[in-house]
Amino acid sequence: MPNRKKLKILGIIPSRFASSRLPGKPLVVLHGKSMIQRVYEQCCKSLTLHETVVATDDESITEHLRSIGGKYIMTDKNHLNGTSRCAEVIQQKKYQDFSAIINIQGDEPLLHPNQIDELATLLSNDGISIATQAKKEHQLELLENPNIVKVIIDEHNNAIDFCRIIHNKQQLQNIQKAGFFYKHIGMYGFKSDVLLQLMQLKPSKNEIENHLEQLRWLDNGFNIKIGLTNYESISIDTKEDVDKAILILKKQENS
Image (cartoon, rainbow, N blue to C red; front, side, top):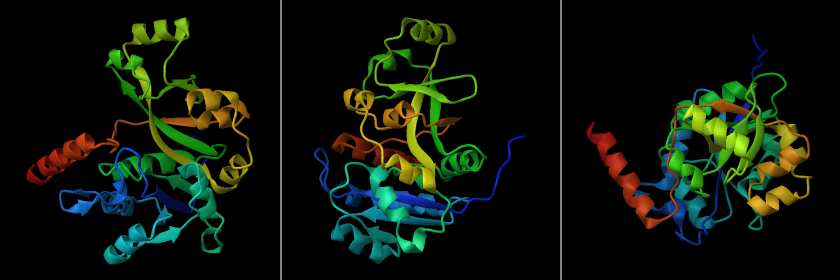
């Protein structure tokens, strides 16, 4: 049995107003509630997060969060990604006693609280400093879709590689034989001290070529543990995604 310890875990939802494809995305209304409110409320249902906070750089988002009683912290406008925004939060005095954080995507309003708890439980194991999730994908035609990130996993569920297109012939043969590949689910858990170490790393060649920041961590010798999940959400990036999410929410309400 793995050794687990009780962690004080902070859920952080990075949320910026600017979006090239869907401006003002966090405040888009989905069947009566804003997207950021739906994500925040799902996080508050988690059994393992001690607190949830939205990390944003926009006053319209903070005003909205105040109106619904949500917790937030203003962060620098110049962050390149959500990971560095999370690192700024964990360095704030009032959050320095949290031993771990979970970085939750602010554009996935259908996120299931159990998915957060799965990742938190994995992260509580001794020796695991970075954890994320993957889901078996049986639609092999999606292998050709570069917008779906694939993860290659070893026999101990450690990440070997992340990629947009798999070029390794042996890996492709293994996938064809198995009938599925592992699709990366982009929620991350970090021990707080390791997250701060990651912020000191320079971008690697792999990261730059593939536009995947987790490759920087692998290239610098950090281990990423993969938790397998059956949960999957949808990311809201376009008006079409908004319409799809609203239909799902209506069905959930009527079921």
